[in-house]
Image (cartoon, rainbow, N blue to C red):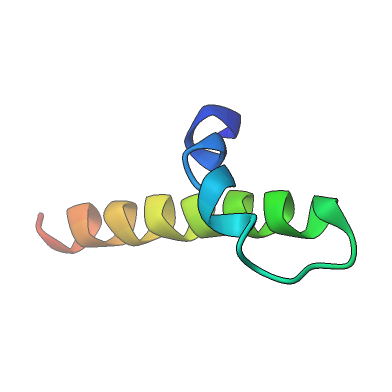
Length: 46
């Protein structure tokens, strides 16, 4: 998950976060959402 979150690091630098951790946490949440969506689609395809 951390490796995937790092892919969004450059995009998160453009966002105006007061705390630099905010962009990192947002990247993690984005990747988690993408993973959940892929699992749901896979499960519905059975």
